[in-house]
Length: 440
Image (spheres, one colour):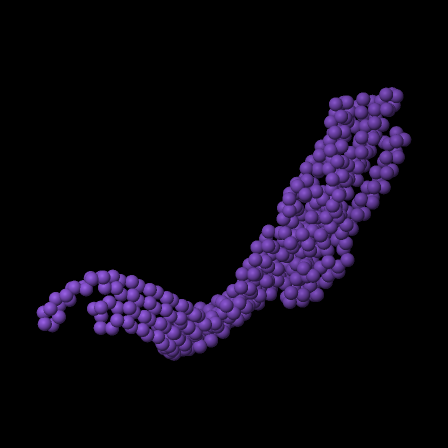
């Protein structure tokens, strides 16, 4: 028994010491700020937005001309055997030929059937779509953040309740030991009290392990060291009121999935226009400035040749008939747009269902929360009365223990109900597009 008490003391001391190190209180607002800065998924989503922004630049639009330059030099040394018309033979040794050239050219598409225009507009809308995709990642990351955050809060409160329960059980054990020493109780009461202390200690240790694991999960989600020490804010408020009609209206207008579906339809309109541009001709401009110089050997007619000049031209190209390829692409693009419209209708229909279901879950969660609060009040009064009766010897230790367990279970159920209701509220906010506009 003394060895057991020593082990329990060492464990509780280490727990108290770990709590003392958790000086930082990680509020919900601070957790959101850290997640937006450090979360790996959010970082990658922001990088994807930057890529789309670069793609939507005028430098990727085809509106700017291309300019290229080239230069070269060659050298040749040869021996030539020559025979004139009169039959005279001669030999020219080490005949050197040197050539130099340089040019700079410009190419510009003046008109391409408006394909360039629509492609540039599509790139800009793709950038807007990437921002919506990033919002989706941020929303999902915040939901995951609060799911873990509230799990840490729930385990924190459960841990506190288990600590109180363990303290009550230890006091009961002391009382049983004193009563046994003075002949006022049996050894069985002492043994039962020891068993309850052991069980409560195990529950407390397991709660500590679950809490530590949940905190490490939260640290990783926040993109910081898994061993970071912190405390948690367990206060939650339910100040928002919802009705189905208002929620449905907001969801149809602000829900991210609806906005992405609308944006994809707009992009498909550009695909149709881009494909139709192949029906029209294209007009291109090209120009160049070139320089050439040759140093010839003695066998050449001219010892040196030099030329330079500018050339420019227009090129008109019109694919009058391409075997029906353009017609097929346009037809398929229209079908793809129709599919996107059908998909949007499906999303709207599912969203209406999801909002109604989420609202019902939220209302049920609030009702359960209210009921659990009443249960805690009832069990608290029952425990206090049982404690008084136990001290007076009017009830058995088993009856007292049952009242203690009932109180602990009701507090645990209350914590679960409280954070379930908060998560249900966040789900509603996401569906209506309000999650990123809410103060946490």
